[in-house]
Image 1 (cartoon, rainbow, N blue to C red):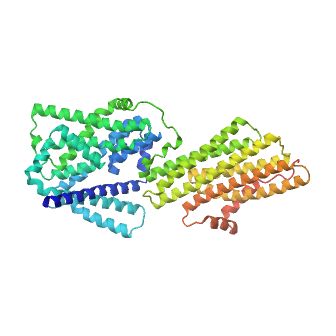
Image 2: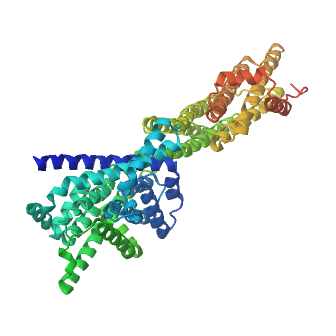
Image 3: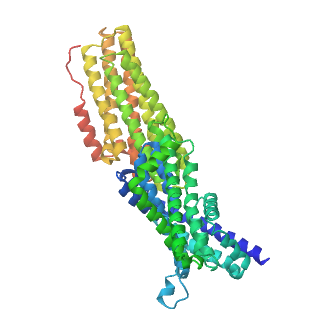
Length: 589
């Protein structure tokens, strides 16, 4: 019965350990706000720098699997090259050893005074209390993320204590000692360590279990070393699983991780057993401590990195031999990799970057469609249709990804950013639809050989100039988050509304005087309607940007207040745009 209770207690401690790792890593990720992922993306232009960055990011996130899976995602989306990912993976292997060093602090003995206070078990309850106070009484945001880190750390320490206490009665059990001695067989030890880590999907957790077992005094150096090597191999399982369904290079990234650890294990164990045969190491049969497990874990990964980094191209060649060349997915939306959903801030950045590309394509498509009004070209017309279809696909891919992202564990700020992007990509896509409508008007003008009067041409030119500027202002504000540009859109939109009304009146006058045909009038009316709706969508984008930056702002109330009140900024810009786009009083009809 005692063994059963001990096993249940150990399982409970393991569950706490895994949960503690999860919420501490999640807190660290949110606190970083996606900065770590952005650093990985931008600063891996050489392998040494990649190693350092992989080490730092993994040490902070407390999870090498997160870093390697991220690297697979980067390579799959084309953000990172295979060569860059190699250094990051090597650094991640070193960075993951930090957890083992933290857990080894629980092995500080019963010394008196200050030294005993260094044992995390002594101060982790205080950290847990602080975390609970912040969670219950603190404001949401960074403080809550700090609380998650503190309570996650406290759970790690408590779980280690629980696991150690659960297996403590086994310290004097000869059968238990005999089982552990079996793992001194290198093959069995490596396989065992790899399987446990692969099943748990966490090398930190499996190393933590090994450190807990070491407290019994029954685990020797000879038994622990092969298991530690196997744990590093087992850590590759997450990246290998994650690479399923990805590009060729993404799969190669996962295999580089595997080959790094397999080759390192073969070299390390070969050297260890050869030297042991020559010098007959006395420590092999001695009990290993949690600190020595951390040392060996760090020594293995650091030494393997030093040996293999100069010849990392060999790892890449092995990966390429394993995964042969074939067609790769080079679509822009490959950056919307589902691996990034676990890093919401970074995933939102990718959505924003892709949305900016979508906006640029839409703006270019609209510009080409407007050009077709005076210089029709059938081949360019087909290109406009293709580009509009691409914009539709962008909206579909980005929108679907954002909806998935909205279901993740995100902050209020991230939720607002997702809302902004969802609203804006819808308006951007509508603008591309109006670009196609403009193309259809150009096709009708060309097919029927319609000709506008000189006055109509000049007025339309001025109106199109205003439309071009409002699109440029709205899209620029969307890309940069510039509030001044966003607030400048509404005054121009008001001027465009007035221009449309004037153009309609002038057209009716020309129609009555017989200076304009009915067919030309219908085309002009369609163009004015489409351009005015483009301005409306630009207004929606700008107001949405302002809403996100000014909490509690309602779109309709904001627009109504601008027009009712004496808003200096609005009035000054309205006056400026009115003068800039004033219709000429005398133009030959």
